[in-house]
Amino acid sequence: MEIIWTLDGDETSWSSWADNMADAPASPLMQELITLNKNSYHGWAVDIGCGTGRAFLPLVEAGYRVVGLDPTANGIWLSQQRVNQNHINAYPVLASAARSPLPTKSISLVFAISSLFHLSHVELASALQEIYRILLPGGKAFLHFLDLEDWRHTLAKEIHQEEVPVPSYQAVVTCFCSQGKIQEWIMLTGLKLISLELRTSSSEAGQQRNWLALCEKEVL
Image (cartoon, rainbow, N blue to C red; front, side, top):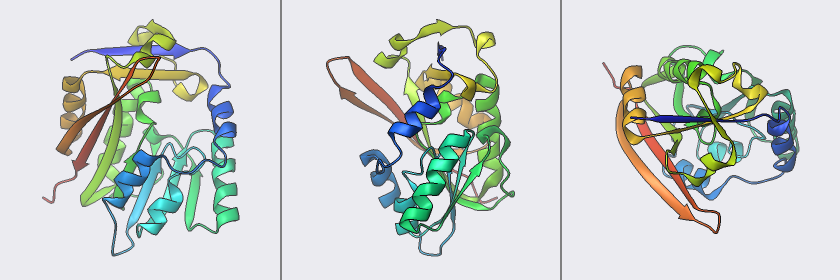
């Protein structure tokens, strides 16, 4: 049950990424997961690390009212531009996943794709506890992690857990972890792990190895 932390020292990287993705649609993965979880009673979904709001429209089309959380002002500005231009019923909020402003037991679906692995160990633990807190009983969460053997961990130097900056959005931090570590983290939150799927894709650079966890807050 290992973890690798890497660090890219360019503190503008997140904002630069947001600029490049300002008009990009939801990824095929986002579209797939949202389509499989349509909502008939207009419950709330939260897009954690919403960035430029790529998942907003698919979530609304799937029947959700949407709030997006992102810690960067540029991301929130760009996602609000998307909302205004496309008349999407979604609400971007400047906030960290580790300190959610959302009420307890208010959310039907948590969508955390391509965001949790950019948190420090302190923030990740808090974010997972916050996900449990805000979910309604019976609510579901999609959580995305990167495997230890994913080639992308070679893009930046490995660092010790104690060296990871807090808050992590001041630099690009990436966490790579084993299947066992993901299972341990989820168990500690109190969430029920429904499935944990490894999805791989290959390119000339190497193999991307993405873990997708579907979790549920049990009805007690």
